[in-house]
Length: 120
Image (cartoon, rainbow, N blue to C red; front, side, top):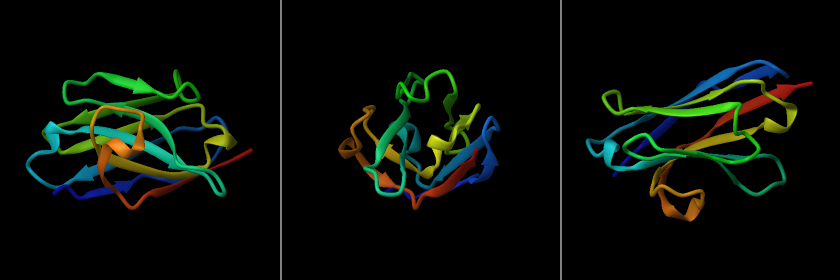
């Protein structure tokens, strides 16, 4: 069992940066790939980025070059550094633990989400 708690969301202007954190409980954190997903109002949940246990990463095209996912296995934490934020990045951001995939159905555990709002 893994419990996930996100933090770091907020309201920023376009062009600003935010860093999201996701703290995981449980001793098996390092065994899981960790993903970030987001859901905007009225839209489906979409993939943002994922990182596997050895640090390989994969990004959605919409965030490639602007967002960076990283993990600290010693701290049981995964991060999402978001730079050059755009209004279309506005969403609730969720972290998840599971398999290294952009498919949300491959993730077994989910956090409660943190709101990111980017004003123009």
